[in-house]
Image (cartoon, rainbow, N blue to C red; front, side, top):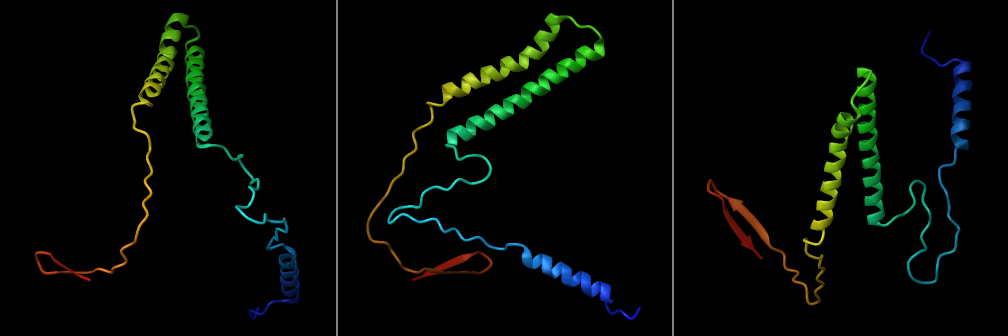
Length: 147
């Protein structure tokens, strides 16, 4: 053992380097572009493109399904653990969270119109391009602005 690689090690390294050289490292997209305007959308892997409202609804449905699964699973666990249970009591205990969620959802729908609309203002005119240099000194901060 003198620290030098053996012939087997050199062969293994050369095979590894040959395998790495065969891996593609770039991709060229030869699709034609339009003569003017933005490029057409290209489908991407993963979730399909959706509007913001569709994304919000999707997240809301996934969250509700988790809530329903947890509620149903805990109800099943209580019934299984007790061996028997009064169906009216079980309905009251596990129906209350659902009624609360429905009530909160209705309240949220009513408050949707309370918020003001979103406004965007665009102004045109000359832009002030002065540079202001500030220097703050002293124990009690004194700021001097110079143009």
